[in-house]
Structure formats: C-alpha cells, structure tokens
Length: 369
Image 1 (cartoon, one colour):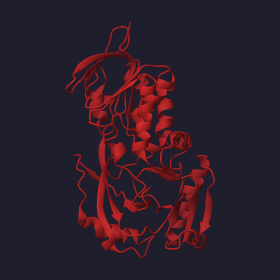
Image 2 (cartoon, one colour):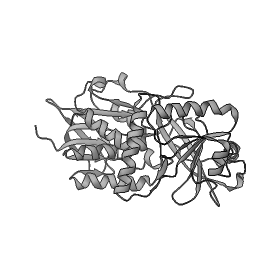
Image 3 (cartoon, one colour):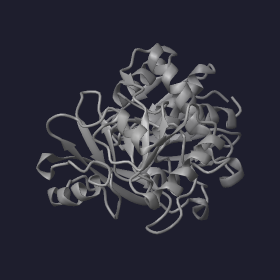
Image 4 (cartoon, rainbow, N blue to C red):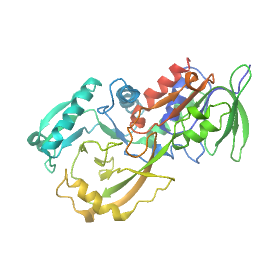
C-alpha cells in the first residue's frame, strides 16, 4: 500500500519534534501535526529551560537513561546549531544538617546513573562558589545548564523540513483508525481539514495525551493511563541575580521543587511549585509571593519579597496524583495496545525537555525504522 507519509507525529513540542527529527534522519517522510498556532506552545514553552544532569531518577528507569543520554546529545546539538545555551552548573543544597543524608542519597543515585563530574562540597566550599548561599553541604553537578528551548525547537523543525518533512500548525488530530493491511487513516481538523494516510503514528501530545489516545480507534481504554495536571508557577527577581549556578534544595514529593536559575537574559527566576489542578489555568496568584520568599530564604536568606514579581505558570502532564509515587515515562507500543505501527507517549514531564533527543531515538528504534 502507498501512504501519504511514512510517519505522522501528533504534537510539535520538543519531544514530538525530536521524534520527527529521528524518523526523518532514517529516511522517512514525516508529517508533524500541532493543534496550536505555533510549535512548542504547550508544556515545552512553560518550563525552566534547564538542562538536567540526570541526578535523581531511579536506577534502570527510562527517565534515568533518557536524561543522561539526552543531555549529552542536547549539548552537541545546541553547539552545532548555534542555539543559545549556558553550561552554568548546579548546586543541590542541604540547607541544614538534617538534609545532608538526602543529598548524599542523590549523589549515590547520580553516580549510579552515570552522571559525570559530580563533587561533594562542604558548606564553606559551596559558599566560595556562591557567597550569598546558605549551605550546610552541597553537590556540584557541572553538566547542568540552561538553554533557549524555543530556538531548539525551531532548529528541530528546520531539520525535519530540510529532510522533506512537514510541520503543520493549527492542525488538531480529530481521530485515527488502523487500516486493513497496516498503517493509519488520520483525520486532521482545523481550517485545512483533511484525511491523510501514514504507515506509522506517534503521539507526543503532552497534556492531551489521553484524549489523543482515546481518539484512535481500537486503542483499549483500559490501557490509557490516568492523567493529572500538575501546575507550577514562577516568580522573577527584579534587580541583580544572586547566583550564577542553578540552586536546588532537596526534591519535594512528586517534583524537584522550587529552585533558582539565572536565565539567559541574566535575571533570576524561582519556581516551580506544585499544585494539582483540574483545568489548564495559567494564572499566577501574586499572593503566593510571600510563600515563595519564605521557601527561598532556606537557601538565600537575604531575599526581599518585594523583589519577587509574578512571571508565568506551566502545567505538567503527570501520571500520579497528589501524594502518589512519581512513575516513569510511559511509551506504549504494540505490546501494550495491540496496534501495529503506533507509539503513544504518556507522562513526559521533567526531564522530558532534556531527554527529548534520546526519546526520539528510542521511539524510532522501537518502531524498528
């Protein structure tokens, strides 16, 4: 059978575009569909733009593997495509003696995960690097950094299009159905509504992952994991930034917690916190300022609440609810849903951005192309 495209990817965020690039690199004709008017307008545009080292994730997990591999691939990609980035390094900080055991556990896990260049620091050594810091002890991860995620996604789009593929915005998936003999018939909505055929189908839809899976005929409903919205808000610091490196206290339940970064424009940003919500609400409550300031004082005692201004919010596509254990990324292939040629991605939250190039290669490998 002749198909319009070898592969169709639903979702033009960082992970969807990375999947499209990986498939394009293997000689496939690729279509990437995006429901929003521009690429990267969902989860990929509302995060910390941090390049994670791979410290925290459980041994053998997809998160651990994809983060470490993805980070190495990402730095090489950003350098070769001249996308703005800064390998500033990161300090994971024990702000009191009671937290030392927690960061020691992180050090051991990071070492198991193959993270390079880690150092244990005393409080004095940490303050020598960042004089404004309150630290009883710390871990230095020199491979962590920040980058221009939008520039990155534009570079991915360019590679797909250079290979003859298409990235189409304002093109929501209305549904798909398997074809007799293999492949899929894919209904595309929007002003240019049409139906196309594709041998392979990848869904990398972020917050819409469950809805997209339900729109695929034959996808068993009981194999679609329950999704949750984990909202996090950010506050920006007016005036001089206090630290050059990323500053992270020990993680909170279900997330890495409120941390600090100096962005590529030189401003300090704090966040995100975590609150489970029912809808996509991106408002930032200015009344959270004092709560943020109280938390930040753990590692930066001199913060002035008046310098914190509401910035933006993001929502993470979580597969766990409040108080539940945070699961691994889920990549559903034929062994899960029984549909040949389909790879469905769920729960691609942090460190999904760092992991994106590695996830793209894993998806292409699992589709056996």
